[in-house]
Length: 372
Image (cartoon, rainbow, N blue to C red; front, side, top):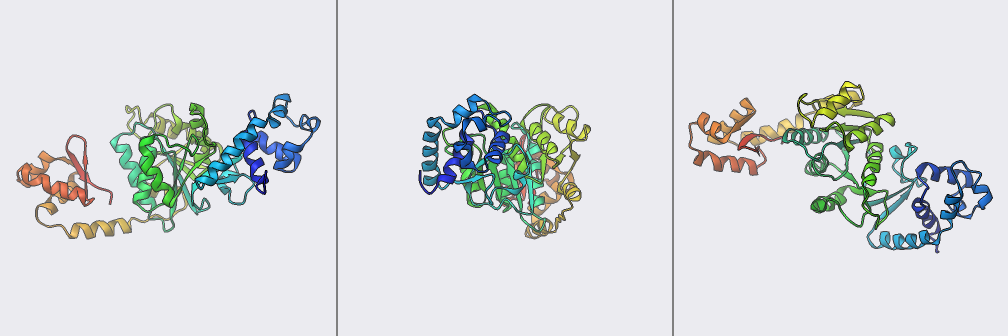
């Protein structure tokens, strides 16, 4: 061991089998320090509630310290920041949660103490409507005056949509992982993860080479809930990680919000149930969230950008955007009909509008104005 003894013992404590976050805190409190946990005599350790022979034996298992040596080498090589629950840079919001991890591994440089932090979760099999709601929510949150930190879990569906929307709108974002920082799952989100590190962070309570276990992904939901001032559920079925996160956020006395959906839509049942059981406030946009949280959210910036882009349009393109503004969504055939123009003329104009971020193409050749 070296001058890094303190960190050595902090990592070791987080790796001991049978010692969870609550018991780890109890051990440190009883012995007076992290190092004291490993130096305390067997008889005194056994006086601590929930400490038995197995825990005492595990504290002396040299194999744990071999893992610590490997982890220290890993975090030094890849620029990982280890953060213990007693360290001053441990996220303040998370510190107040009694079951929060004793150790976090952080890749990136993020200020967790920003004034506004929102966790966004939802189903992995999101609908187009759900993805639109997520994008629009994040965009509107960017108009609060201060930068909002967006937290999610890098999973398919709503999670990755929230991260991408944050990056697009210049907001920092944190991805909480259910595995060590030596890998990215799902691997198709590796590029997004790299972008996140540039302005936000990847966070995990798991050391490198941790086996993929379903329970770890459930466990990370408490970090997502604990890091935020509030949790927003965009879409969710009757069961799933999003509802677990919402329940945990509620238990932490954090605000929970949910977008309502059709009663016959299986991917809205979870949200509707949260609202019905008064576990979540119903929201339709960021304005509703801002009202409950006491945040000022203005759409002036968005409107100014839209006006500037629309003012640049003329002729048939102006007619197309006017139609979409009036009808909401139209097929390319409907647009051609209303404009009295052939599809061959309308199609390249729509493609240009799409490249400029003014319209979006939906499944079934439907088009709508983008959330700019």
